[in-house]
Image (cartoon, rainbow, N blue to C red):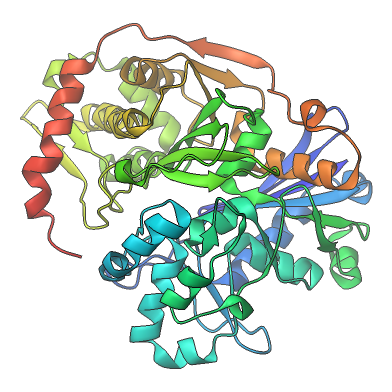
Length: 475
């Protein structure tokens, strides 16, 4: 059996997977995000650790005792700053934090040259530029910078290590060469001493410490390099070869396509990152608020929970032409706008607009934001597998299929994709099993094909951002 741990933004999910790849059990412990200032988004790494332990301990005792290896997945781009004794110096600055936007312009030419990616506020390197100028005492005390899942690795194993897919999102990695970039580190006042060691996702990065193993009811087993959440989701969905792609409906929304090599396209806001397997890369577009928009509009409209909001939207018969348009930029946006100051907007409300209409508009607006990302890619996938906690509504699935104009394939275990992928990477790290045997696509459960044309609505949606951009303010 294999244990996969996924450190998300809203919670830590742990799963146990058997030798046939079936998810036997899963458990989630919730997390909250702190926003002490506009554009800020932070979490306490200590809360990650407590949630990780809680999610593991809730798994069946006999299954935990049979685990042979552990894989890690996690939210990307976060900055965990450690002093010389590995004490956390400040709350972690998260992927959807926009405070470092003013520092991106200076980094962008080098980032394009040495990493093949735009300098975006959510990435790790600009965060350290912000800390260097605004919290100089913290910067001076920093001796190591770890990504979120790699901080968990430190507590689990005592090792400071990362892997290629997650490291790609720091802007410190030479993505083509799969090594730290001295030039990008120097641009933020750092060098390789501040960085963890690099391994591949399916390599062993360390062993579980005895004290931690005893506390969690686990054997002392190897811990794999793992992957950033999206690359881990790809491993769990069997998206490893060129032409394969998936859509992730988590807190953020992602279109992820495996590529035949390193194929940068920074001019379109597309990320070109390492995959979690050696000598493989991928392209990725990111919108910062996807399922997060659904959580938000559910609270806004007073529904008791997300399922009740979805049900109301599904049974609402207001013609689409009379629905407001929703810009889903509640936390700014990456692809294609790269604007942390972009704002959420309902446009075109009337006296007839009610809670159900706002929910429907939100589902549609997220779809339009994803279509913006999909259209930014060099080539459009023939179909998309769907993963993530937001992948549970058939009503939303059909809306998305109509907007994206590609078939959407829902597969077994879609809601545990990254954690499942982490467990698969653990298996690859410990055994001699092949990628082809382990990284298979889960069985198809349902398929949603486009039924109606949404191009007119999409054109109106796309016209709103440039019309309103100047009203969003500067970062």
